[in-house]
View 1: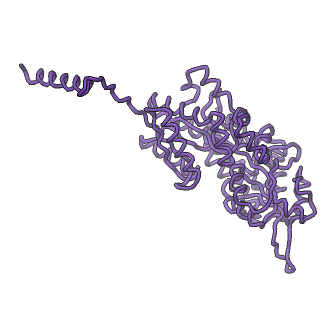
View 2: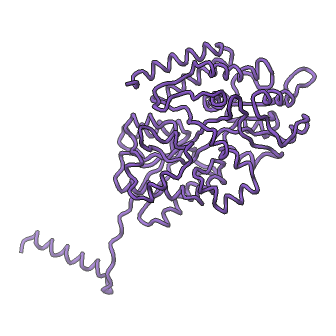
View 3: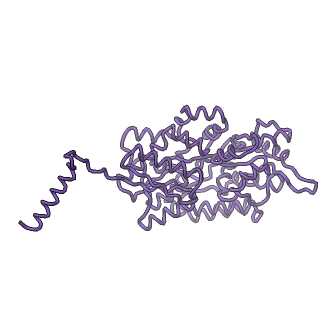
Amino acid sequence: MSKSWTTKLATAALAAALSTGLGGVAIAPAAAQTEVSFYYPIAVGGPVTKIIDQMAADFEKENPGLKVKPIYSGSYQDTITKVLTALKGGDAPQLSVILAVDIFTLIDEDAIVAIDDIVKTDEDRAWLKSFYPGFMENSQTGGKTWGVPFQRSTPVLYWNKELFKEAGLDPEKPPRNWAEQIEFAKKLTKRDASGNTTQWGIQIPSSGFPYWLFQGFTTQNGLRIMNTAGTQTYFDDPRVIEALQYWIDLSSVHKVHPPGITEWGTTPRDFMERKIAMMWQTTGNLTNVRNNAKFPFGVGMLPANKTPGAPTGGGNFYVFKKSTPAQQEASLKFMKWVTQPARAAQWSIDTGYVAVTPAAWETDVMKKYVAEFPAALVARDQLQHAVAELSTHDNQRVTKVFNDGLQAALTGAKPAEQAMKDAQREADRILRPYRR
């Protein structure tokens, strides 16, 4: 008998022994495990990472054989940089939450798969149609869906009801329009005997992503600042310049807003420390303000001008091409599981992000929550006036050009008109290759 034949016999005997076990009972082979690495945009630690970790653990319990491995990847900017670097190095994740506005960048890098291409059943397709249309504006292009809404938001107006009452304003009624916003802010601004401002009427952050809050102004002034194909911006439109001048005048003319650049990260703290009476901020800060403000506060839609309006914002799920069919199927299953109505509702309650489907708002847990905390409804109701967040091809560069222009105008380095004309000229140069 040859050595190879002996080996075959021994292998067969071992397999038989393993399959029957010592007591002769058949033992099923272990199911192959499919692992999905999941980049999530937050620094390590904190309450949100605990929620994500728990989601992954609960999903794995309900889906034996599937494993979701959260990797906390820093800010949104850090995350897309890490994802694109990993992609070039052949080590891309299978799933990530990345800004919805990075859709064109991810498509141009051939990094992601269209969600339409991995859904298979009528149930899958119904799920994909279940999200608010306002959130899908930054999730679809070219007739395909590329991102799935998850942690989405809009900017809203927060106000301190105690300071309203002190100023002789109705604490239950926020400013409804641009003119009232100035009028209220004047009454809410306080100065000491030396003329130093001790309390500002309003603060609208201009660091980080000033373009996003500024889109509130441009939308209210009747303009969408880019086309749906992501190939054209309208930064030098007169309505943009008028809106920017309004923002500048809050500080330079009306003296109700801090001068220069105001910080995104410190604005909620300034509000909670009563240094400002009103602020524009993301609904993503709603839970933070609710948990930490030591005074009654209100939440309302952004004040209107020609029309009400605000941009949507936040992150979508994206599924990456460099993943196996099994990993793509697992990613789809996880996205569907996380966005089921009850889970989407609880995520909204825990974080302040807007629950992304109408069905989530019909759950018992959400109905109870909004009965106790009606402010949570504001962002949902504002969606009917919302537009897509600024998103173009080569979005990082175009957005930087726009942000730089806004900050140049807000600091007085350039007049509003010149700043916007310069920004548009540079955006045209960047986007010209994409206009076919």
